[in-house]
Length: 255
Image 1 (cartoon, rainbow, N blue to C red):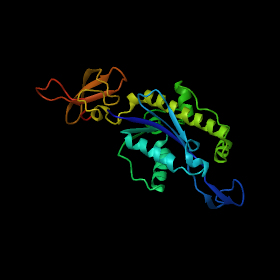
Image 2 (spheres, helix red, strand yellow; image 1 turned 90 degrees about the vertical axis):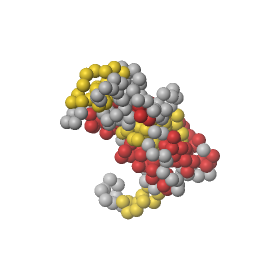
Image 3 (spheres, rainbow, N blue to C red; image 1 turned 120 degrees about the vertical axis):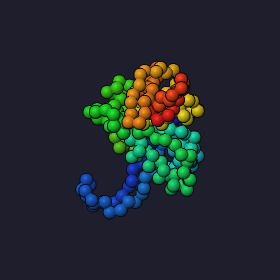
Image 4 (spheres, rainbow, N blue to C red; image 1 turned 60 degrees about the vertical axis):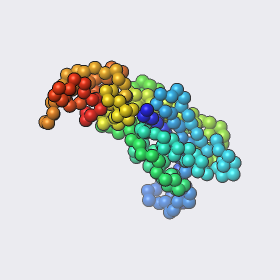
């Protein structure tokens, strides 16, 4: 069965030298590059949302910035997933993840499909804001946790274990909101990876994989007549070409 992973990263900041605070272009050089602090994740269909952070590993006692074991665990999740979902994932989480993979000499994980809920919001809707917190509030599924600002990141980097507990709760809540938003968006995503094909089914919803579907009319393209289907579970539409002398059509063909 297709495995869908929800995840969210928290990273440290770059540290550098400058002459004047807040003046554009005054950074002289970077004295320390960013690293991974934590990640939260959940598999679709799983009840538990997980979070892992640097203090969870033995290496933290000797090197508080060593993220190699944390990054390897993240790579392992990517390697299992068929579909990976993140908010602003294409621009941030995915590229940050791959940057740490290559930094630690890891090879590319097994190929997967990506869904970025921020890009989904931009493509299909016109919300006042596409930020995770604002979308969650607008859709009535919750809010992000307040962190108090950059001080939380500073305290974590300095080894404050109480701050780390706050960071982990903050990271975890983002994934909780991410999944809820994705579930609302899912039936609208016309370019969603075909779950039916991934599950090896021939007559099922392409967005959620449910076989609880009904035929609802036809649509005409320039080259074919298409049978339309609606999923009675998630509400997504699917379609397949109508062929002569064929009573049972495949939903998993071109939508």
